[in-house]
Length: 155
Image: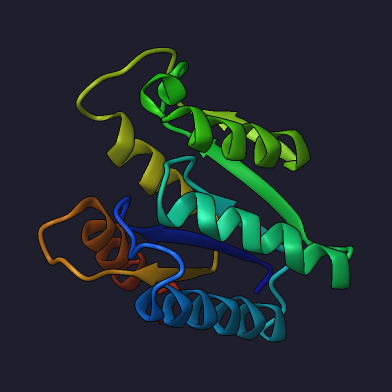
């Protein structure tokens, strides 16, 4: 097992709330667990919220584990146009440090996010999932990972 993807919601608890600190702690434990299972390659979906937080944490772990690699899977060209200035700055900093960026569609379509999620599951052995709502793309991605026989670490 060497590759792990992330799936999770765009809306997160507000920092520095206790709920946010618990999420961050659980995410770090999940990343440590994936590293312990042999994962060195991490795929993040390029959205604000959980994707961005997970990518930032992988880069922090890379300071201790230089062999780690971060891959960004962007759903379509220009997907960051709707990001706030603060989130775009964070995302650009992550993008600059990514090993590789996969652009999965040249423009927006109704299917581009689902295709991005399927790509990440197909190319990984493990999925770290932050799923709180059953009717969501994150929930669909987690179920796809489970049905595909991937190890799912749910936080």
